[in-house]
Image: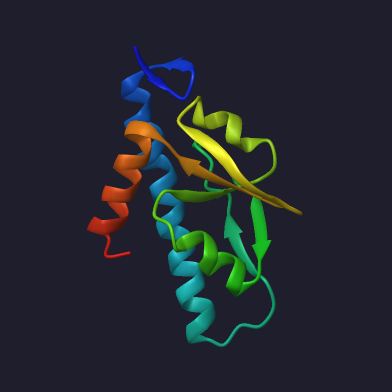
Length: 121
């Protein structure tokens, strides 16, 4: 097993976790683009980008908060306490009311950054 931080983790789960999070990131990008296109006011409703594939938690962020998270292809939006689904492949880098920002680390971070680049983000 490989190490991410100080925890032993399964290297194959890094790819699964990064790809799952990237799916939610892509969905949220579409939400943000539609909100801009239709001049939707108020907070953006976005899907929690945690590694749990069945999560359907909705988070609300200002456009500026959302853009700030999207400025780093390794960061993802999670509902509070959902970061545990990253199983050692992510670390909380910011806590806000209603959401946390999780930065993917190690192999998961590399995969997440590569997927964002491939998507042109």
